Image 1 (cartoon, rainbow, N blue to C red):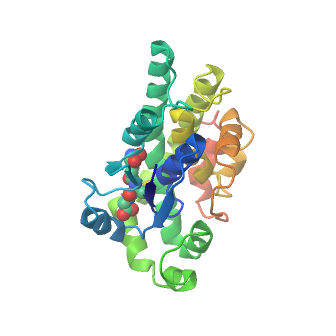
Image 2: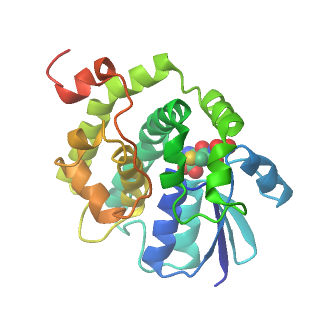
Image 3: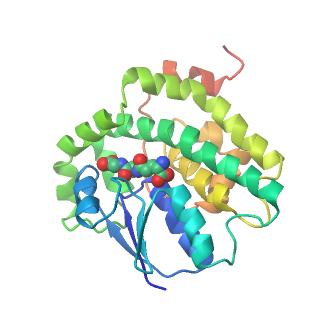
Length: 250
Ligand SMILES: N[C@@H](CCC(=O)N[C@@H](CS)C(=O)NCC(=O)O)C(=O)O
């Protein structure tokens, strides 16, 4: 099977698909794209949408983590990303949907907000990426791309403050899926690969890691995505982190 995965470095849904391919033992080549510029390149390559992850596999062009997880199971059924039992499958699909629709975007907004404040961290998030130009140059010239990405993703103070206030509830939900045995079981499934990279990306923030790493959600992230690239020193305003650090304070 031949596969090429188009990613943006450190993009959590991109890492979700890389992990799914590795789990299935499907060899693939990776193409790293710059954010924003990626949209035009994907269109020029004939993909229908504008986002990564985008996967060319067996002559097909797939996009979106949830479409890709299903197609990978069709192309190579074992090891399965979804359980055969219909009830268990429905639970995994719901957890995967939660990861995609509810968990992914707040983490994306926090990331762009923080990179806009301090783009020097881009070097660590781009570790191992082949962007076609030296990484130092990429980081020095990234300001317009970072600004546009923060704008497109609505990474405003107001939204990020709200995302951080909502994070304890999202982490509780992940812990509940683990407790119920939907994720972090013996066999990893599509929801594990969807959810863990978002948590692992959040844990690259010194501001967030202490509130995540000792929970079941943190253990899942470390199990599934242990080598997540990137590191960001404290940058978020402490007042915005109050609820995360002392969840009992309303
Ligand atoms: N929910 C989609 C999200 C895809 C997505 O929004 N990807 C972002 C990167 S994390 C992207 O391609 N953004 C375009 C850009 O940054 O220019 C999925 O799971 O595939």
